[in-house]
Image (cartoon, rainbow, N blue to C red; front, side, top):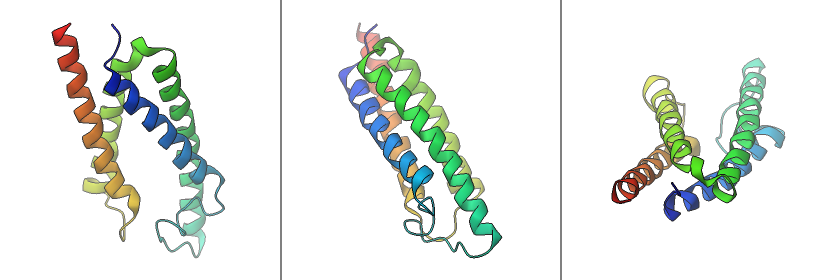
Length: 133
């Protein structure tokens, strides 16, 4: 079944977002940790933060490519991919908001919550769309 057009739009935007933030994390000299999130990168711990964010960025780029491929060509996978994203994003929120909150006020924390809400709403639209079909 073809996914709802909102699902395809959300996957397209999410794909572009993943490519953008993934590219920043992977290719920015400080992975955005100091310049965007304001983390103190002095000492060995800073190098660990930069390396971990670069690894996350590489994964975000790969996921962004999958998001765009599904939105533009492999549309029948849209429902499954939105479900996957809701699950993955809920785990991210659990990790960085509940279990291991980030120090300071990094934009990723608020962004993680906002993305989770958008993805959950998209999944709800997709479920209703499938019930009507």
